[in-house]
Image (cartoon, rainbow, N blue to C red; front, side):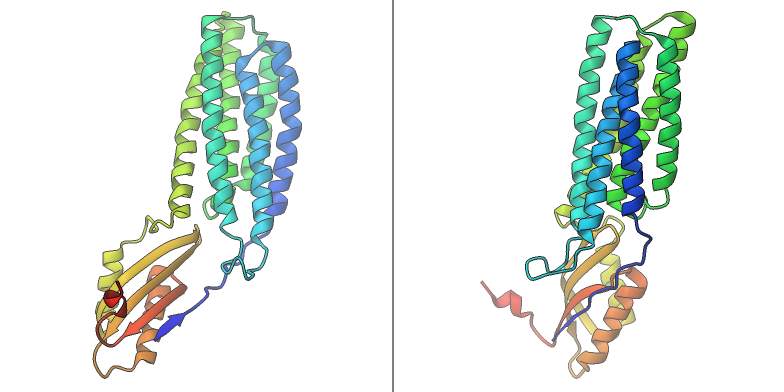
Length: 298
């Protein structure tokens, strides 16, 4: 006997409109930064402009993924299209890593071949960039911890915000001392921070795409808890838990029950425990009264 439930989706406000607004704001200011970087000769500003280009693309991808994820399940996608958001997050993480490589290469060229940098235009545009990024970050902040897709876009914006801060610092140093090497040096520092958050996002998204067990879930604790709370259970095996998205854990398991136990009430208690104590509302449980049939299949 097997039990199967589909957990209800958690209600959430519409994220696609916020992502679209953030994308337009980012793309608009990116053009301003490109012009300012070319005029001032600042690598930090050009790197920030390039980063804002990837931000706009990341926000566009996140926006598209949010819209696609709303499509209902069909014959080819029985779970629906929610996993597309994880794929978008993975792609955004890879884009962050590629961006870091570009920043490092350009910084090396600027260190070996220093060039003149106009500090005043650099400071003005970087300050405007900081304001824009603060506004966008505030727009996305409420959702980034609960949605990996939004988190990917949010990390792009936050790393760009750090870039704006670094550019302002470099502009101040250049204005007061004339030391232009601070520009590529701070760019490398920002690159290292981006590398860290980019790798973290790629690793988490890849873990979900590879059907990895949720990092916060202890399978042994789950097994012990179920057996302790459901006396009719004698054994639990073939446990598989994975994530459809960061908010939707899925599970399959085999449960052996004592002889004479009524499978129906036992199944309901198992599912209740999974939902209330482990947040798993979508589960398929195979009830067995004796030897596991899968163990005899070769």
